[in-house]
Image (tube, rainbow, N blue to C red; front, side, top):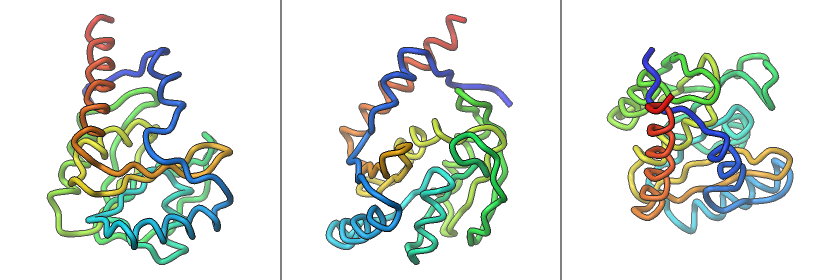
Length: 177
């Protein structure tokens, strides 16, 4: 399980800020506002990173092309969610890293015509970056912003450039260790 990227303390601080639009509010409010946004923007696909966001999408009958979960909420283990997907893949991805295995699973999910659920042993948070890099332009990548709401990242060339810079900094940090 080779590790490709490692989080630095500087990037940890930077990534505490939303990469996209923060929809503040309760789960009901955020889903309601996201539904309107998704209909208005006619997104090509929806990607959910995180157990709570994935569960809320499912409860609101919003289909995701890709769901990435780790069976944890706020770092506490939860009962595995029964989220429907045509294909389920399990990967290892330790906290504060991004593994080659996780990257390959996300890439394969976007090449598949099926809806995919990736279950992560470890932590899924940083896989948001890979999802943004691999998702088709115009897709929405969703993730939770603890105690605030949900972040919606609309995938665009400029967003991919921003994420690429973050990943490059992480890769350089790993190589210098």
